[in-house]
Image 1 (tube, each protein chain N blue to C red):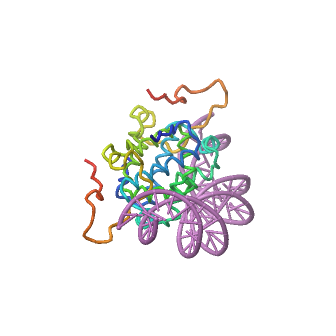
Image 2: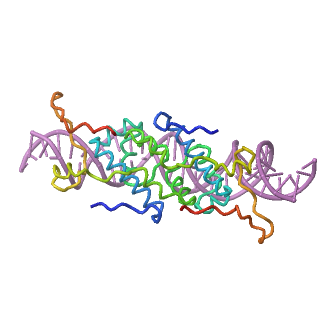
Length: 120
Length: 120
DNA sequence: CTTAATTGCGTCATATACTGCTCATAAAAG
DNA sequence: CTTTTATGAGCAGTATATGACGCAATTAAG
């Protein structure tokens, strides 16, 4: 039984390793070898090995392999936000904010809307 | 209205850019500036800029920023597999397969279980 | 068992990413 | 409006990732 990692608690290195292992599992479930996957993704087999073993890789390679494995659409799941909330649109007059707001000069003057709501 | 990208059809470069923009939106929704995010993630502000503008980044940086923004647990969503399917466990005698199977020598001898089922 | 296929890993040259500046410009605040 | 803050971007030096090669070790097939 392979236990699933807790991404919320793991270190970046551990997460990178875990993601590589997930990609390997996916590859094996499709019965594709590293050489074939490398060709499909447009990278070298050495890079596939490094990726699956968590030895450091680029975001580009990660994306390419997700694509080659046919699961690239799952990136959608990472950012399920519906965009700016309607209530904020009112405040901004329909415009999207392009920069972060500055912090108040007086420590006591913190804005109430400076704190993000926790996930319910 | 910012239209959402179709990850299944986009190029790796376009996907990297889109992911960067999603991270920027998330950062702005929390009213954090690049300098503060960089410190929290343990990277330089220059790297944050490059990430958000899709100018090339490492998987490590991507993970660190997801962490700093408090959404690192979403990596779970990328691999919702429940592991090896029970039916395959029977065939493997309870062991996980560690390598891809070799292709048949005779072109006519393709296995039926060589083809992965499509997503329903 | 023997044989073939797959994977891991070392090395080196090259390519790309990261950092720590700096400065210009855009956006927001006053 | 003016002033302050945030972001983009160029650059040089350093660090890391990639590709191509080979060979050893492991796993699966015959």
